[in-house]
Amino acid sequence: MRTQALVVLAACLLLGGCRKSGGGAQFAAGIVQPPTTFVWSGALTPTSIRIVAGLRAASDSVRLRLDPEPDTLRGTVSDAFTLAPGGAVITAALDHLTPGVQYAYSFEAGGEVLLEGTFRTPEAGPFSFGVAASGCSSTGSNRPVFEAIRERDPLFFLHLGDMHYTNIAVNQPDVFRRAYGRVLRAPRQAALYADTPIAYVWDDHDFGPNDSDRTAPGREAAWEVYRELVPHYSLPAEGPIYQAFTVGRVRFILTDLRSMRDPKTDGERTIMGAEQKAWFERELLAANRRFPLIVWVSTVPWIADASPQADHWGGFATERREIADFIADNSVEGLVILAGDGHMVAMDDGTNSDYTTDGDGPAIPVIHAAALDRNGSEKGGPYSEGAYPVPSAFPPHPGQWVWMEVTDDDGPEVCATWTGLRTASSSTETDEVVSWGRCFAAPLLVERSADSAVADSLVRDQQPTIAVSLSAP
Ligand SMILES: [Fe+2]
Image (spheres, rainbow, N blue to C red):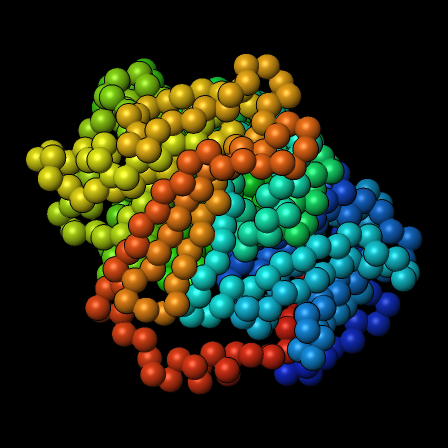
């Protein structure tokens, strides 16, 4: 596995003294050349974010500039760096940000803005926010749905997989890089990702071929290029891309249900793999009674009849029962499954999602959000609130997505509403398809420190820092 050449070019730390780099640094040979010019961000927390950018060429040295709004807060500028011929993929780690603040960032050279974007940091404690979720778009789609999502201004965009449909069946990193490049150069997607941090896990078509599993020929390359090009939360050092993070009083758990799953030819199949499943169960236990709402991103349908060859959880009925029993036995509360794969919006209030051995498990709501730009399909079910496949059979398709609105005023419960939306194929006109929500009791075990307001104030208006590194193959 490649190592990341950590060339910290720009930790301009006023706190610890700012080290001047003189004329900037020249990147060494052997770096990853970007598949296109792009910028996106992710791994968002109240005080940090990761920005990944592809810069092709600049005659002058480049700096990354960060400007908060309001400008009474402190911004910062990275040290200068010089691009090698062919450019570079650059990862910028921005830390010591202030919670609940809108920031603008830009890569600049010679007084010219090369790339720019925005993001907003979450609050450090309980707060209300909106998230957009969906998946499944034709490679390089430029449909208005991406503009509609951006205009709604979500705190972040939860991408549920099938970011492209290149179905790669070779173990060549460059092929994966080019696929991401096609996504990132589509103007409306580029604009969305520049202004909206993402959290993204793949499904079959952007990991490997249709219905792909751990035997996909490109597995190693997919793992490598994801780590290199996709802004992500902390991952295992290598292998599957499962990750978890917290926003407000909501815990998000993202599972990789492709790169460890057994092929259809195996008898007793696992979809997660032993290591990921152990991690997932630890995450559930750690989140339970700590977070009122736990959103588990399962890229494929959970509610489905058992069927040994199936691509969804119905093909993994033994493991599904094991997980359902684990959730019931440990009294895990506040869990909601957010899923993609089916090209539909569908919602179940928990009536149909119980797969425990005894049939006495908790009612786990299931929300499906797709497809951004594909023909409709209905998978799994039944769903108590209905299933709404993308209506048209031929392109151009309207785009479907879900808006998750979290209302949290630091009281005894957190409320969430999931609204299925459909954006026209030729304009950003967006209609509501279905909406469902409920409130989740905040566990009594959560004791917020009386000093939390003081703690919050301590992290306000620190000096932001930027550390720039570049990806090496
Ligand atoms: Fe899909």
